[in-house]
Length: 171
Image (cartoon, rainbow, N blue to C red; front, side, top):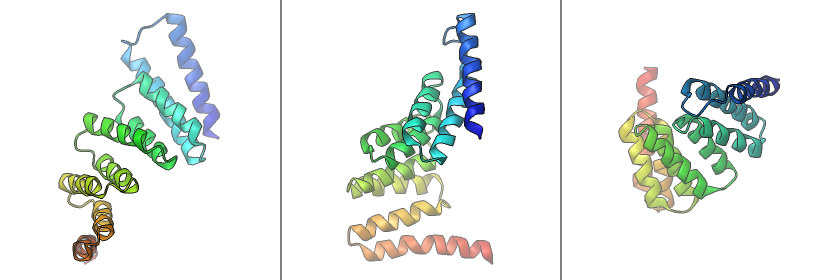
């Protein structure tokens, strides 16, 4: 339902750019165009139309290379499609743009974990936790990495932390 609207928005902005013969320095217009491609990419992602989502996120990045969210979502699609090297690059792009992006660190850890690079995964999960000590997903993932290494006691310790955090919120 929203896909035709996003496509129309992109068409309008694109034709306006062509008419005015604008250069890439017209940042405001390009940010709007980038956002339209980003939203269209999200819609395609939600529909599991990953190839189309990839194209839209790439277009969003073309018009706004500093759009960390587009890089983050592109990394997610690459991860889903098992293009792990590309996912790594996109998450690193996010971290370069937003060094304290907890999701990018955690997701980078997931990619390393999937590749069997457990030590690298552990480092990324620890970075995520350092950025946000209440980011419970990173504790779970860190526990899984320790468990994969056969370090059950370390895994248990990590898995208990979210329980303590959630318990303190409930009581």
